[in-house]
Image (cartoon, rainbow, N blue to C red; front, side, top):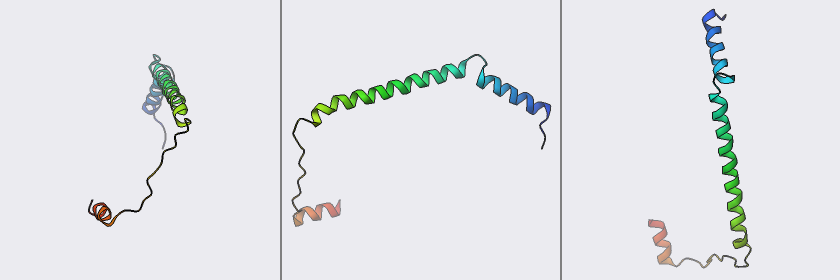
Length: 78
């Protein structure tokens, strides 16, 4: 399976578009990198905002009482 002239021409065209061309691909990748950085920054800011509330000494309690028979029936039927 050899490469003909048309195959080489198409490969060269794709290579020019991906690695150089008019810079569209590189600008898209730069914009994507900026978006990822701002997303990570937003996540880290959310973590900083929640940390004082989590350490305020007010633990959350889960009710661990057993279900009554009527409550058990309701959960089975949906």
